Length: 191
Image (cartoon, rainbow, N blue to C red; front, side, top):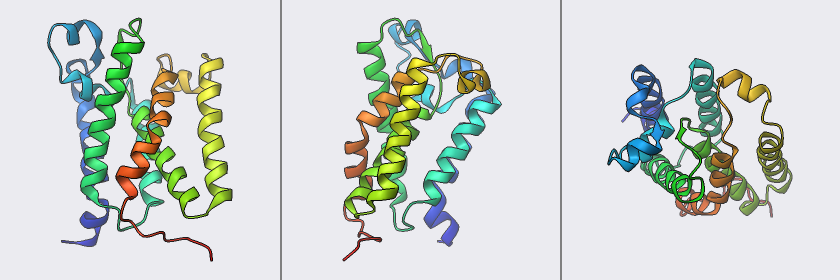
């Protein structure tokens, strides 16, 4: 299998899914009333569509940046399966803790969990400085979105930022760290 697919296959597949999902997003939104009517695919699919091209672009850039920072040996099937699992868990958290949330779109909850997992990996491999900076940045951005609802992010994506998606993603980071990096050798450990 060519290196590009072996190393970046999952991100290529997920990127394609994210782009294709923009063609008919109304069938994919996390939409509470439709979920209550039995359209259960929306528990997962809402995380793979976006409010507009800027929203999609921000998440694609973040996703590619995250992947480029990862060990080349990171198993591709784990990225795909974890993304689906996180989408489901975050949506269930929406359902049970945010009854006032009627609809949601975006990959950022998953993305925050992936970056949070990277923080966990960095700290595990004793890369304390970069791990701490990245961790504090994620927490700071989530707090900013929670306390400043009319910010640049909201203006770019043209819908309110559901900061709870970011918060839930961060809360799921320990699970993501374990799932992604188990059996991956520490590549940056210091003696």
